[in-house]
Length: 338
Ligand code: PEP
Ligand code: MN
Image 1 (spheres, rainbow, N blue to C red):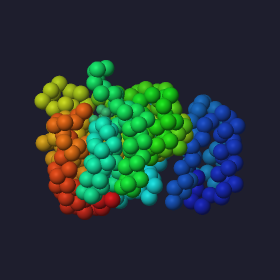
Image 2: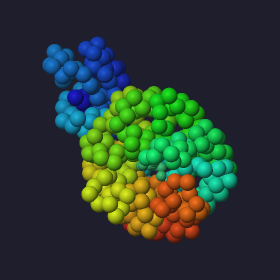
Image 3: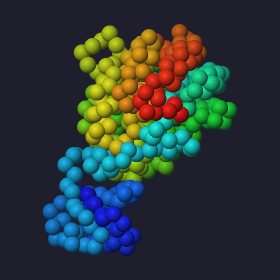
């Protein structure tokens, strides 16, 4: 249920409503819009009628939330959420491109590619230090050493970093280094991990699970928000279909669908979405045209030598061309490249 307050409702009036709701065991989530304040109340609906909230000063109306996802839904918050990462805003007018290798392989490899993507116009640096690999025999990542290298690259380039956390026990460790905590596709429904990143004071990039419906994806975001972390960025990265020519099927339907259903920013990862570097730029362009708030793109200085995801990685040169194209598409969509 949401309690919509009148325009110009007084702070004491808002507080009285909150007190009455919390007194009746409701969990409160406040949304202070420019126009008016909305109080989201989650709890036992049958108790609401006894509270006579409509009769309280400052209350305009009570509106039931019909969707399963409450805090992540547009019903709760009409205005799009803008997630702040340092002086970068994701979800506003600016488009942001997160770029870098699939995995941090060595100090030299990461620093070289970090400078390349920065020069091409990326505004965030990506790179995995903990790699969730399909095979237990494949490279698993440099772990904390990889995080240290990412932090050094941030120092040198000024680019905030986004890196994956795979285990609830290492959330604190990863959060100490990174600017955005990435939840990978395979962990989208790892609810213990979601509850743990909900407690971190870093924004979360939540990738869509390879077989997750849009509703399941938004429910995963709901876990993070219900745990107190409202800074969630959604990332469409392709889903599993019967098609095997591409690694995944990039579901660009999800971009406008999620924009309708939710106020959270949505970015698109055409690298994992296609698995083929030649398809990355066309699908990146399509993602921006579909209304995405940004991109996550894998870039490697020698894709043929990459320890993971080489076939889908752009060379710095190809990445520069893509950035040039995005720079041209952005204004058509009323956006600016950040
Ligand atoms: C990645 O970003 O390198 C990654 C492992 O992505 P996903 O979780 O989407 O497979
Ligand atoms: Mn990858």
